[in-house]
View 1 (tube, rainbow, N blue to C red):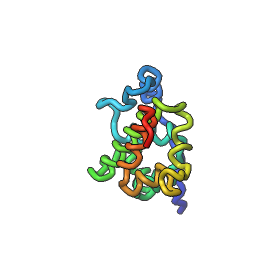
View 2 (view 1 turned 90 degrees about the vertical axis):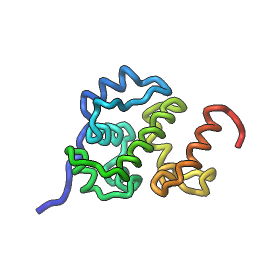
View 3 (view 1 turned 30 degrees about the vertical axis):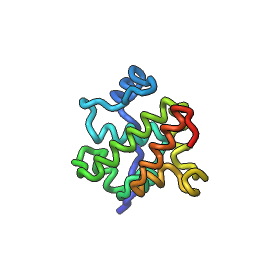
View 4 (view 1 turned 180 degrees about the horizontal axis):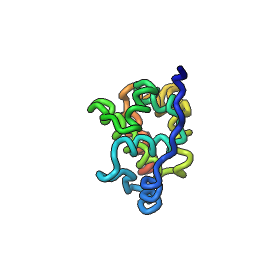
Length: 141
């Protein structure tokens, strides 16, 4: 029995929503979009495999598959998903949306050789938000 899972594209509903609200500072998610749809759509927007998303969220690929198929997401992982969505929304205002996923996985001297995704995984998003604040305002750190 194979345990391989198929990659699932983001839904058309999410794609239509991002076209209407793809401006910087406007959130991509809305209450009418389920967490399952949001998770799949965010993963797709970042260009990440399930493996990459699972590493950042500190969960198994099987859990992601289950959540993308509509199973409930625990509060801990829902919080991590909201944080990742917020970071993505902020970064869309600072760079091309297609570059966000790659930027998040690129190691940086600013983060002691870690990637922004590593900071999210480790729960150190304060450092990332501080950096994003300086990028947005142009203030030196």
